[in-house]
Image (cartoon, rainbow, N blue to C red; front, side):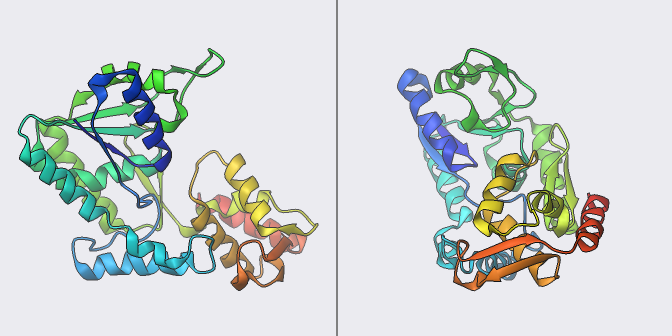
Length: 284
C-alpha cells in the first residue's frame, strides 16, 4: 500500500495510525507544493514549471525558509517514484488521503492526469463533511487529515473507495480548466469545486488584524493565520503584507528585507484602510 498526503502534518497521523492497524502499513509520500496559490500555466513544460518555481523563490526571499528550499521540492519526481513502485507490484494500491480544503483538493486535481495508468488501483479517502471524534470525545468536522486522531484515521479507512473511470476522465479536465484560468488564488467552495480568486483575496483578513498601534509583522501574520476561516500559507500571506506596504495601505517601520521579525506594521490612514477593505471584500 502506498499513501499520498498533501500536508506534512498528515504524515505523522498516518504513521501513528499504522502502529494501531497493521493493515494500513505502507510507504507515505507527501506532495509538498501549495497548489492552492501561484501560477499554473503550462506546468507540463519546463518553462511553465520554472515560472512557478521562480514565483515561489520571489515570495521566499527574506523568509525564515530561504528561497533555496524551492530547489529541494519537485513533486514530479515524487509522482514518478509512486508510479514506479506501483508498476513494480501489480497488486499495490495507492491511497490518496484528502481533507476538505483547497490545498489538498488542488493537489488531487494536479495528481489525477498523472495516475490514470493506475486506474482501478487508486483509492480516495476524502473527509468531505464527515464527523469525527476529537480528544474531548466531541463530534467535529475536520478540514484536514492531521486534525483527526490516529485512532480516527484507522476508522476512516472504511471510507476509502476506488477512484472511478468517470473521475479519471472528468477530473483531469478540471485541472486543465484551473491551469488555463491561471488565477493566483484558488479556494474550495464545497465538494471538489475549486474557484479562482484574485491575488488580493486574503488582504481583508490581514487588514482586520492591524491596529493603529505598531505590531511586529510576524505577530500580525500569526494572528491572521490563526483567525482566518479559509486557510493559506504563511509565505503567501507575508507576501501580501509586503504588497500592501508597497501600495501604501499598511504603514511600516524597520526593514522587511532583513526578515519577517525585523519590521513593524500598523493600519494606514482610516480612509485608506476603509477603501482597501472595501476593495478586498469586492474581490471576494
